[in-house]
Image 1 (cartoon, rainbow, N blue to C red):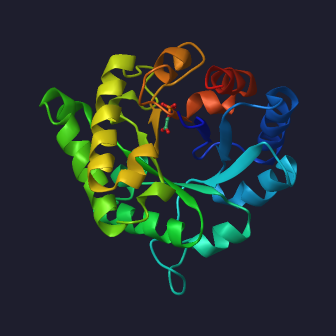
Image 2: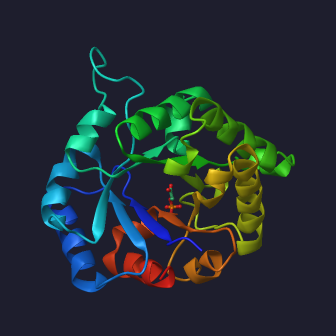
Length: 248
Ligand code: PGA
């Protein structure tokens, strides 16, 4: 079984003082975790958070997005190479909030993953169905479509990525998928990865969507759940640390 990964997606929350309090709280209680732990602050705070974490930190740095372009005339974008220069090791791509509010297509997400991989950054590729899609029995169809775009563009390099299954209806709602619901989708994603590339069978597949200190252990106990992508609960040091402990 692979080492689990717990990533905190801070979204557009925080500020210099709040970040310092959060990171210091995490460092004070984290000890030697038995899983990989990543924090993803807003881009402008990556430098601050890297400083707070120190060089050999148990907390690794992640970005929340990356440009689909390599560089040049893309106002407001941040290139994968720039993130890499700041010590960023992971990058969330295709989060449902970006798919929805920034209209990111499956193909854009696939190319963002490509940029991250080329810069030596592990993309955390998010997939997930809306409530409507689930109600119409389209859950596996939807996540397979999203994953297949990434597979097509990144064939042969899939082992370098992480996938996060985040049902849209579970994000920020307090209504997590049940462990059985999540496991079913994770197993389908694993089967797809394995079918296209045997090296990708070990890709870590995280669950995200209202994971918290109360439900983390049951979700993380599932055979194909290799960690969590945590939103709201990642903003409270004590609760995030409980999830990290559950993944150990
Ligand atoms: P949530 O967010 O834990 O607040 O539901 C998860 C995410 O959006 O990555």
